[in-house]
Amino acid sequence: MTFSVRSLRIRLALLYAVFMLTSMICLGIFTYWYFSSVLASSREQTMVKREERLIAFVNTWPKHDTSPTLAEKLHQLSVAIAESDTIQVYDLHGNLLYSSPGPDIYKVDWPGGTCVHPCAAVVQKAGHTIRTLNHVVTLDGQQVRLSIAGTTDEHSDVVRLIRNSYLISCPLLLFASVAGGFLLSHRALKPVHRITSEARTIGIQDLKHRLPVPKTGDELQVLAETWNDLLARLEAAVRRLTQFTSDISHDLRTTVTVMRTTAEFALRRNRTEDDYREALSTIAMECHTTSRLLDDLLAAARADIIQRNIEWEPVDLSEISLEVCEHLRANAETKHQTLRSHLCRNAWTRGDISMLRRLLNILLDNAIKYTPEAGTIFVDLEKAGDRFELSVGDTGIGIPPDALSRIFDRFYRVDESRNQDDGSSGLGLAIAKWIVEAHNATIRVTSSVGVGTTFTVSIPEQSHVFSSELPKLKAVTI
Image 1 (spheres, helix red, strand yellow):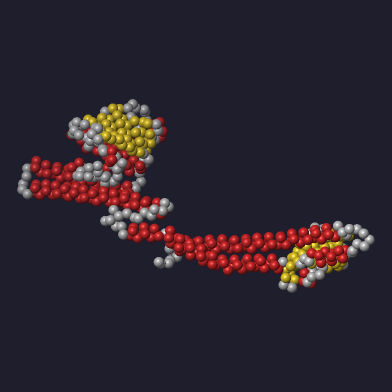
Image 2 (tube, one colour):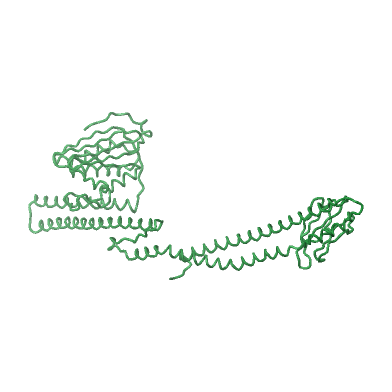
């Protein structure tokens, strides 16, 4: 077991020690003050009750000719009760009328003042603590100064015993609590050490391994389960990346092989102009496919690394939708497909026109690509509240239900065996989703296998900025 101040176990133990020490100091101060106050109050109340008994004893003495003097009455009382407190009685001029038997150290002078109400005082005398109660009272019909005094040494001894016991037990309790806290923290953090050790053994080639999950029902179990979920997602991402890398390598190798073979075949001997034109056409087509693949890779990298600033500007969605439809109409006609569009006009928003054009190009290109010959493709743009909804649908092959939640994942392909024959890189829809989120929009998909797929993008309207400058046009269907 290693010890380091940076160790969470040590820091928890030290924090616990500081907390316990502070708590013990506060508790000790409070205990000392509480017992001192209680004992002092108890001593004072005892003296007050003795004063009351003395006054009652003297003033209720039967009246007759042979009645004893005040001093005699007080002496009889002192002998009868044999209390440790001393009693001294003075007249108002300070002359001593009576002093009960007892040690001289308990006898103190009148403190001065009228003391119409009981006056309590504490006096240090010959190493003893003397508590006095002074009061001007009426005894036997005359006003006198009554002083009751007694030692509080016993109470001081009790408080001192409590203090010394606390000072002795406090370090022992502190040591025991810190040791217990250290052991408990060590036991509580043991699963963390186990998780850390297991995590160090997991490499990129061993992502199937999972961390042990302690069945404690606390934060450590949640932490381990969260890490396992992360490892599962990382494993799936690496698997897709590996498959994607293999597919891309195959695609690039195939493209380069086709271009090299075509060029070598054309250069092997003299050819006619048509032969050279056909060879160059083949090479140009392969270059175009490779360029699209590299564009997808660059867009994906930009989304993660660069996050380039969007060039915000007024964009008419109907205009770019019409532009993209016309641009890809030839692709649809090549497969004898019907491309229909119903676009509302003045569909103004703010965004990056090149990114929005790429978004629509991705969705429409996918629709053409995965729709059989003689199928139908539609593009609809309509207003829905304060947003515009752009829908791209087809009557194509559809997407299986279990794949709908993953089609926007990077490098994901519904058919893992799909290669460059369909021109797919597995990045198109991931790029589309990034563009949608960058424009504070949403995208949703509905699909049925063998029936078709519809992607709907909902993007905020910004027509209040431009509508006053442009005439309202009716929807157009082409």
